[in-house]
Image 1: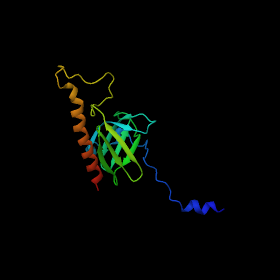
Image 2: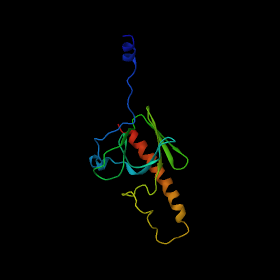
Image 3: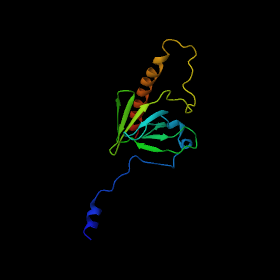
Length: 155
């Protein structure tokens, strides 16, 4: 009998990250998309990085296994009271009151389909081709961070 009053006084945990199978890619209003593309969601030492299609919209970051219209959201991160910071190696983290999410920009980040056979051909084997992913990832990182900041500030 004495344990029940103690349990009642404990704050109820707020689940974060929010999992939602109710939102699919086709449900997202295109005019509210602030940025979309491929990210790698980093886990702990025992969880491999997962390539996910991410969509930033006002106050939310949504992750899907693919950009297919029927794909259901695997993760929804509420951005209202979040912060975002860049880290070395084209990484950034989104910190909410409940959780810190670590991501890495994937290249090419806006390719609509998950590739089956390598990267897109650049056509001539010029000397700068090896630098292209790094330049692209740096630009994409800035775009992701800017979009997340805009999404957070929506009222």
